[in-house]
Length: 291
Image (cartoon, rainbow, N blue to C red; front, side, top):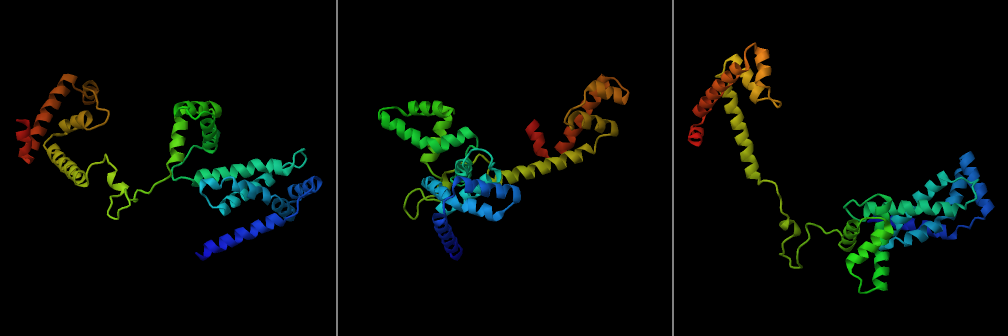
């Protein structure tokens, strides 16, 4: 609470200082910009930025409809102003305020996009234009033709901003339905269910997951024990043919072992039968299953 009050006081002090700062003439502005750029004069930088904080405050008020603190918007605008000062070329025939406007707006827009919703929005220039212009364009089109269908409005906006109609519909839904806590009750009743209660999970129930894990461990133990009944050549063939990801061919194993591929097939068949009998001895339920 104390930190918030201090932040608000600091914000008010900065606004008062900005509103009382003198305007800069064109030549004075140019001299300060050269002094900062060529001699790293921080006093010149301070005079340039404080003289243009009015611009930052004015632009910040245009973003207040997004429900974010004005002081935060001003701080972000100040960051954009400093970025503009770092990049400004005083030899060009452009006023600093004109150049800084783009950087201030871009900094505030990025802040709004990062903090307006917990759902990350699009960051492309087209998506930004859609986010910041959708309401205005929709209101203008609806006002011009009150009978205009929503699909037609979406089509006009998509053409105007160069985005797809589905993107327009998605953004309109996001702007019309702000974030809602999953812990929020469905109704105003104190005993009402929460939104979390109606989320459907496709995951297995915890007891089912535990049972599957236990079954898998049990089968692995059975298999390791059963493999003990095989001789070295049978085990080698089963491992290469059945227990490896690629699965060796009969021909390649025949060449490796110096026997025909038909002989490899016979050994594999005998080994599989031995494994089956060993597994049934460990778990009689398998015998009933395979009967």
